[in-house]
Image 1 (tube, rainbow, N blue to C red):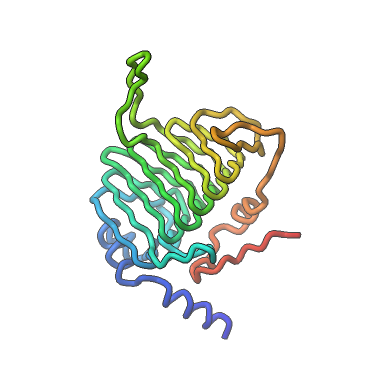
Image 2 (tube, rainbow, N blue to C red):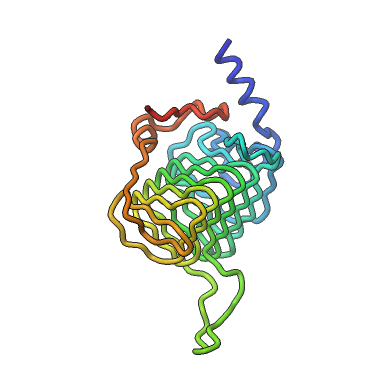
Length: 249
């Protein structure tokens, strides 16, 4: 009965119409027939950009628009506009009420076990590359562009509108954080809540950066959920939309 209950929750949460359309529209038939991408909520998709998946696929490995955080109550799924290229290097989950925009000739690359809560925004007009086991808290932003041209009036030097963003492995961005153009975040970094990252950092593993603009503080933190992700492989039970990971006391 417990397994039946989980299956029913999973079945009725998926937007099957949008799921079928998405897989057929963006993937090769040999990939689409496996339904590696599941769509949730009132989602929308525009643009004819590319979506590239790894060679090894399984059903539901990528979940878009899934309501995962109880406090994110929006019925909206994901709103994606892709005019460039989105590369998934493995399993991924993007929460409800998310907006993802990839501009023409831009590349958004998401590492294995990419994981976000709801109400997040990703804008990629140059290049955004994210490593494996990345976690992004609710109401957070990744944006590699200022969206408009500007210059320094004292020097008349024009600033580039967009600059690449590189985020390493096992990075945790806490809620309402912002990672902006030109940011480079090394492996095993934690970005504190409501922080704004605007530059390149060279840090030892387990460092914490926080503030506006973000600066390193004299503290260390190591996520333990990465050990679960690396040791267990893909979390099959997330197919039901339920978080099966419980931190050890």
